[in-house]
Image (cartoon, rainbow, N blue to C red; front, side, top):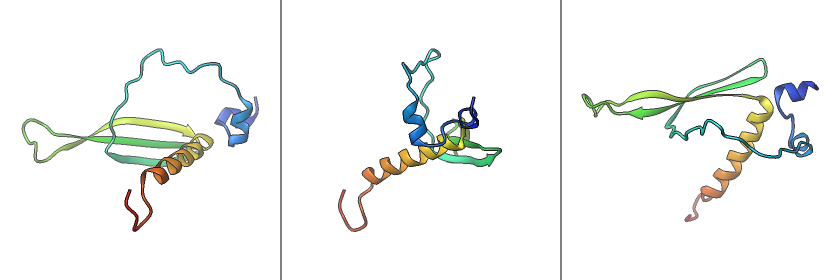
Amino acid sequence: MTPSRRRGFSSNHERSRCRFTRVLDPLQVIAVSADLIVEAREASGIVALGFATFYATGNSPAVPELRVCSRLRMSIGAATDLRTMLDSILKGAMAPKGEAH
């Protein structure tokens, strides 16, 4: 196994050489809504992200809590792919300054 395989894909070129027959979701992982990023760090080639969502309690709805809803750990290669994908999505979703969307 090459080092880049252990840490994830080092480039889109390397990813294109790998073929996946299918993507499985046997546990039917649920989608969650995240409102804030509460953790963002890198250590030993692993990027750690943590997300939280607002939660209004019945006792004090005016002062919502933040509850961690998801934690992600990924290789730098996967984080780079995520950044590229988000950049593409956001460019399409946000109109340039001065233009209506």
